[in-house]
Length: 218
Image 1: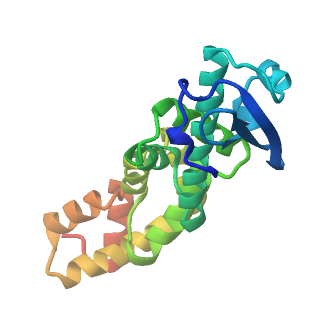
Image 2: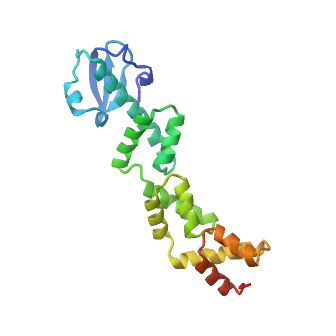
Image 3: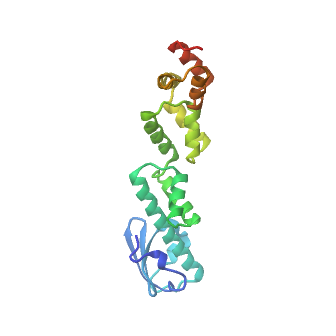
């Protein structure tokens, strides 16, 4: 959080440290003799620079840039946390949203690395939440669910493992039966029914088993 927006701070006006204050655990408020004060997280600053900070220190251009970058990382982190407070996100989704808000890719990467380290951001947890929500209104098979997660930026490994954990063979067969019933009610039969079920992500074997149980083997 900025006392005045840290995005307005730049290397030309931040030169001499006026005051340093720990605003909360890990969060440092930096006040400069020139320009606005701003906040940063200590983990975004190299330990050697952090230990050297003291009131009256004349900052080099490199030190100035490092502190400003840390403040931008913290801004990106705050925006990411605000999104996560509303709903689970995967890393890719947050990266896109933060970029749209004007954060640099470097600051986004640092902020999301920190959030993943603290387990506030988890692609696996996002996948599990998405699968639970998806199953409420849709009857889909394994391949479709994996593809949908992949399209949202979830890695193939996490997508496969999350679907496997949430969808047993029995569950998939049950969903296939539900999907078949819906398609049949819409007048689909024969090859059109098989094609519709295949597009919904069900394997040939699962489709064959379900249609046999449903008495629709044409």
